[in-house]
Length: 592
Image (cartoon, rainbow, N blue to C red; front, side, top):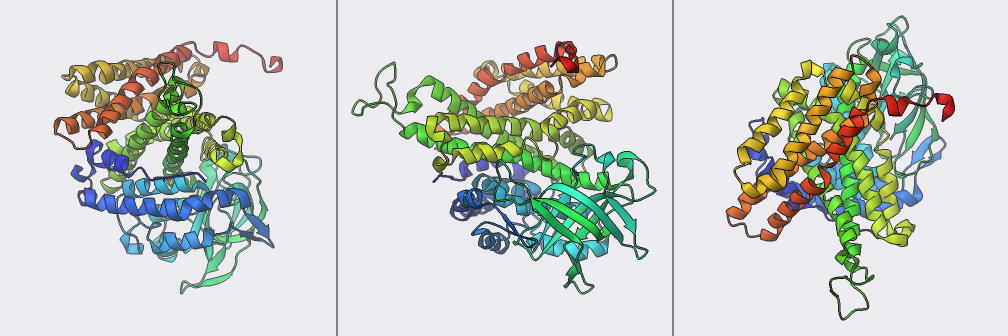
């Protein structure tokens, strides 16, 4: 069976030595001392390894079953959900007014990483619930908050979001689901939604669906979309469950991965719903849920790469195959472990440098969300809005790539189900697709986020990187090996941004054809920035006489690897971008 050990030391390094959470002026951060975060993350790691990991293969093998309208989840999932509820893992950052613990979102994110690595499909049930909680917490009426939030906080009730329809994926403006006023303040919701994760299951006594629909007579397109709360069971005035609502699961999808999560076709046949937020303002309310979900999906790319890397590393140290060409490293055995071979080392270093860099990037993003929400910091809000498509798109593209690389190190064994690597690859694949396919993330980044606020957020990112480099370039080794490559990559990114600003006005296709390249270029620069910050922290720890010198020296070596072997990719992406749309659009559709 695959192994997983929560990377507690690295989590603590990122939180306290790189991001310095307890020194941040954001409300609640001063309480996040090492002992507090260590206790939380150590226990989260134990739950992940002892409870969730053994169920990962079970969920993959058994999948979910639709029986008489009820979805049965895999063996052990109900017990695991009880553990999550009783341990308070569903409520870490939820509002204490509704039974939450009130900790910063960054702690929720760090704990979730371990759970997603150990069992991504299971964790989706509570992950989507958290998104529904957030949407109602921000946009709901006081009555809606009192009715739904306490149960969503504990996951006694779970939540979903219902956007996609059979004929309409990303283009939500052409949806057909209708919400007709009932005359009593409620609406009759009629339509069909597809690809609804956790849409029906047996892990909670009620499921609270957030459903996008159009009220007749509203504006065309997305401006006419509203958001509704549609519970599986109606809720009585005293909070007890009433009659079954007219919402049902018509089908379970058979998927490539995440078999343990129920992906449903949901039918709404005049179901009773209540408006969440304002009429025709549903997209604004839904994006509260979507943006949080996108950071969570970006973390799924990191988390699946992490568990795949841990297993590939263990295999590479154990598997004997061939001899080191510079001299036998295992002379008493018939062969050397494959980790001695440079190409295997290259692959492992690519995986290691990605997962550790992405961890810092993800936690930094979570801290920006905390600042945006707890301090109403417009600069943090603008920056995380800019970074969200990169966190989601780049990290899931690379996370899948790293899971495949980990599988590759197993050779033929990686293709055999009993070794478990296939599941990591199959589960990671969906993260590139849902919550907005990665091509859409790239278009959002280039088409909307880059020019937002007159380009203020992207300029703030450039200035932060420039200021950091200037502050630390007095260290000659650090400058040559880490900071100069970051400076060059940042200049490539700036050149690409300037190209878009010039090209978009003449031929929008010139910008759109380079969108994915720009997203990946920006992802590399952000991870390069994180690695520079980690290198500075590691250098300081070594200068202070850190006991675990191997840990910090490994950090420096990995930072140098990322700078030397990964950051040069920005030059390739820039060349592609500056080639414009002509090579991409040269063929007529009929000539493909």
